[in-house]
View 1: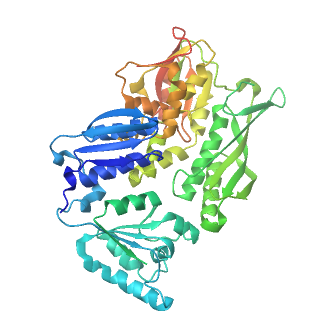
View 2 (view 1 turned 180 degrees about the vertical axis):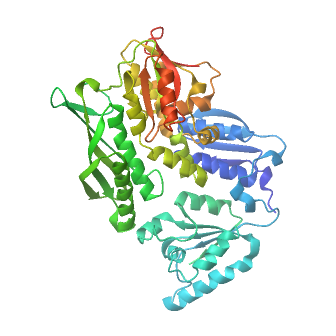
View 3 (view 1 turned 30 degrees about the vertical axis):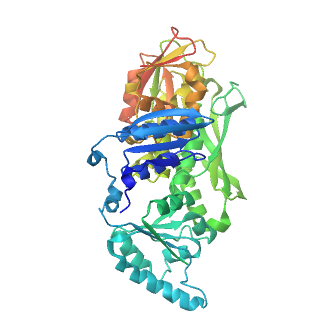
Length: 209
Length: 304
């Protein structure tokens, strides 16, 4: 495995407004358990909120200000077990197992014949459980969001996966685009920032298009 | 009439004045019906805060029909109508436009006897301040946006925001009230600052007596403080005195912008315990005396 924990992580939250910077830092702290962390923000409110969040997780923080950017240097000693683990993050802590994120970008698998592609996608979703507990998140974007609504041929499978702890998200902008915001029957809605963050946090990202 | 008050007032005769107000905003909760209820309670609140009785209302809607479809709109308006019915207020009509971002609110008209109008200025030295709803909806709404609030918390804060200030306003008429406002976007301290601005008086707030949602403290301590609270503090910090070791989380809660917040009522000290008791007996359990008005401080709020 890569020795992530000894690396000093930098989170650039410039250009983001609350609560996005705190959420980025929160995810980073919970995923990597870093002892040292650098966070960049560009407004006073984020500075204060991130500072307070890191304090609540046992970090001591020093900050400096240069050219409109605040730099927070956070450090925490010793006991990682003292970190409060969120209830929903049960699956995050699985030792050596890797976290696989599957990004599904279409309701068809492959190109050539859409009818065939639709069937292949159904088959893919039904078979994906073979990944076992390494399957961490399923994110549906573009026309793939149609797989999360009532008429989806794999709705019951996805609901099963969600129950067993797989995190499922559908892109909110895409649901809106297709007029399906109210139709979604499984998973949460997500935005591009969360998708980018999730792909960064995953050990492996599989894109299905 | 007075500037920067909750609503506009027009005197029709010696017996009748009209109160007019308008408020609309983008969704703060996901459920359209609940959002409708909250928007209506929020718009009606300004009439109550002026000592009036709401009579008629008109809907203001900006709606993305193409992306959302008809159903959420129907639910949202049904929620608004339910709250108007609860307030015995007649919906006369409204206007809608297509917009990429959903917005909903209402313009409300109420009646008040010209001698019974309550403005936000009028506090007298020695008066007590009574607050009827707990603070913290802005912080919790930020935590909801971050996906951190539990279903139970979302439920609790939704009901709080959808609760009309009607009962509190009714009870208020039984007492001699010197000033009243509703706590909304400027936060508790911002609204108190408006109440004392230019009066030469000051207010002492007993911060531990201010009703606060427990989850708001929890999320505030984790850094989920909305930008609005920081802006409110930047704007009014010159009027606010606090010890250097004053709890920064509690301070942010006192600046936290509220949606459909409670009434902030000024009354004589001798009446305050009876007012609070009446409010609590009628189900407004969080009502509390949170501070008093003094001439010792000029245009200043002191936190204790």
